[in-house]
Length: 566
Image (tube, rainbow, N blue to C red; front, side, top):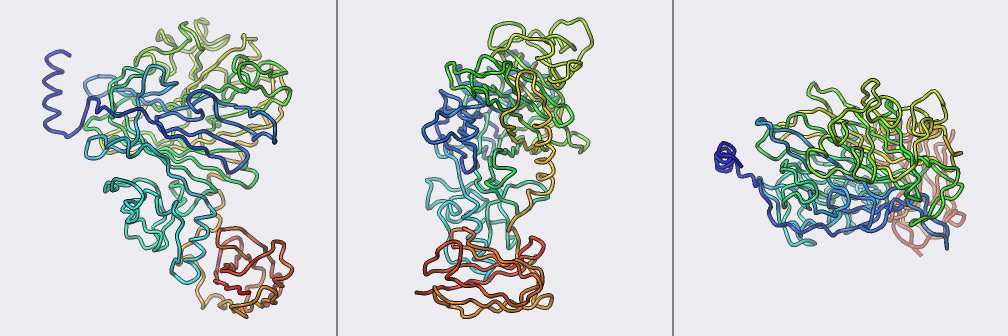
């Protein structure tokens, strides 16, 4: 470090309580599966995911009993790089941890990493648990019982958190939640509940949600050798059970600059090593319009190699940027570059230092040369390009790996977004989804089936995934707008005929268990009185507490707590 930089470092250390050297955090160890639908995904919290640190663990579809699981991805992570006002490159990235780590568990608190071991975990909650609490609250404005997962959720100010963990929550925004009473404190007994945290979708939750937080200042950057950025990354992974989302998984990222430095020319990249079954016969490509990176097979059969292959039923899998971060003018950015690299030491091979990682983030090869249209994109003596292989492989006039007859191999790719400026305290948010189109004819497949899925998922994302049962008291219709439901007898017996009066014409009644299982639904059509024979329900019930909801046009207008006795 020259004298000028040393003096600046000392001055900055005095003015800002920011730790710019390692804090001896140990490598993250926590692992958990996102697995409620037809996909099983291994989640880590060291900046990487989709593996168990030895094998790929993006298993889609889930195998039948006795069959071997097939993984479509080996690993993925965020790469982030930028330049401070003095021109110093700051970068954090993760690949396979073989050289060390660039990220560690925990938030950045007052400029320092916490005791990382306290945060070496994932926080999981299920939609059925949220539905249970939500129905309980909407019935009478109180909550009788809250599952442990909701009590553990690290929402700001959670008063129950210290009952489960050896450290108190810092006074800052962490895991997202719906704040029923707008007091800024997460308390599920007051009607608050975990949500996705998507802007404009205040009360949306999924069937399974997993949240964790990491930072890049917990130790030296062993993976890249890059200087610390001082960023905190909060990640929420989630999935839905119901079609057409039952073969997809989703990831919300919240990136916060907690350093005193302005990060200029900042690029955020989604790195992926997409081993589609067998690892050595992959092709990659992209769709610029949809900001999606895609992996497909180079051959008509995906044999078993070191990993289990897909055989002749080969899918397409894409990472779809559903919402990019805003640029410096407040406009949403899509994927600004797409580049691949090979598992070798060539100019198109594995990055070995921070400058080469940053080069890939900016859409350049290891030696700094740009992508050039045609061939394999390297030294083609044609025109510069921002995205490699943006064409549909089924069209011989498009630029794709298939149309140029590349040798297949072990591809990795980076979907980059930038340049951005990230001032101290600024936040950038983005959401990506991993999409799956089953049994696509190979070789040179058409991307059309995956693109259609992307369009459908994008529409659902833009509409908050339908919102489901997510309402607050203020959204419920008042007694002056509809007649208050009259349910009798209540309590009632297991073999009783239940009568529901003052039902809104055209509404739907739903009977739910306390653990969020839908027992039956009945459309009222043109009747304001509905009878329910508890002896003839499609699911046998026992004595206990149930919820009866009335929905109009898909939104809950009333909830009644029903007591069923022997």
